Length: 149
Length: 150
Image (cartoon, rainbow over all chains, first blue to last red):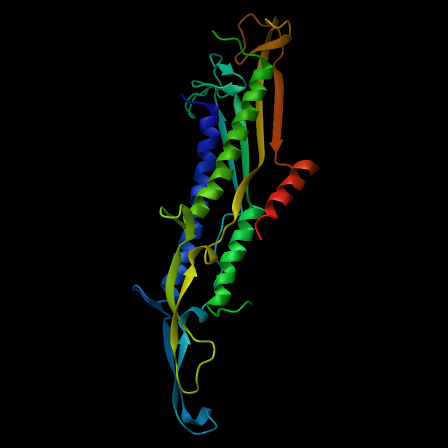
């Protein structure tokens, strides 16, 4: 038996853990694909030979094309999570000051479930303060000569 | 056996939803801290960076030069948050009695299971909690605080 608050909080934790893992994975994947390993990562490039017939000066040349630009990049994120659960609420539950204490729920497989719960969690924009800090971090890209789009 | 009032039951559902929502909000900030490193000397958080070599913007003709730059990891990651959009609770309980509390307040005492000798029909309750917008006053105060971050 466990507390109802723990039950719903655990479900929320799972969703947010998956979401942050996805965000981290996408960032790592981007860096891994576009840059070489090592303390100073350099851009991974693909060598493309340009035949003399394609150039006006008639010389041959090799173009180092960044690998990261050769494939589309669509990072994934969780848009919505819907969780349906049924459980048994005990008569012996103790509620104090509006908070359910331990011993409120039976195991999810309890036969006589008397409460149905539908939880919907949705992706949202970050808090304004955080957006502003991220904006400031993004400005650092300008200093690195990575221009705005 | 403890006494279960309908009022307390609904309040406890509400408090559970609030606790879960707070968990989501706290997580947003904690996840962001992954992109910051705490500097004990000056007791501040500093952005973690990734050193990468990028081509220079103005490449001298015939020369392919690269320059190492420190890119904040926070600028590379997505910072989408999550929120509880809706929580719907459906249950039925059974009338037990109207109880008189010490404060003199009357409250409906319910049973979660039907009593054998009960002649009452179940009380069906469907409660939907959804996220809303803050009040105008709170929104304005948030705006004022956000303006402190230039």
